[in-house]
Image (cartoon, rainbow, N blue to C red; front, side):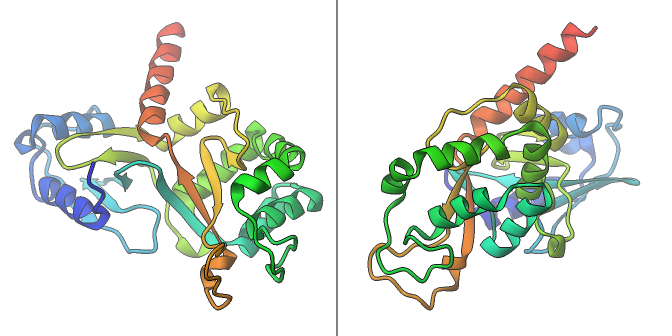
Length: 254
């Protein structure tokens, strides 16, 4: 799938904005009913792009009801970036110990320091082997249900406090086809029915990377070396699996 994110979002807005539900392609009529099954066929839709620094990419409004949608396309997508200093502060607020935060910093910089002042920077493949026990302990702590749910909310829904946004749904795809899911359903699935056995630092399915480590031609002036970059490699499969899990559980409880 071609990943031209901004144009993809604009294309989706153009499909929806100013139309009645019944005027949409059948695929999008179904997506609107997924947002709210009580929406009438002659209801008028307003759709627009959100500010660039918000987690939501587009907003859809029908009457007084509004949904904020995060649009994703492509594979192994980046979903969150922030300074490692603010992210570790957030982890502390969740009760993650200083020892585990040190593990994260050592992995992030990969130079034997917790502030990026080292000289010999190592690749993630080496660090995952060298720090395997420490990474395992870190993963066990952050993937506990009550902690994981708050971390995922930050990654895909709320962002940092300065972003002041709230995503209600994730949509993966283009104007012609895709998968959509309510964020609450997705987080419930990750916290109750998902397991990932990985040597990487991860939060559910979300893989941790430094935005820049500079193994070759290192540039100490790059601000991105102080940023984290969270990747979501299994987005399409996870949305499908989470929807299947939701419907199975709903049918069980009937």
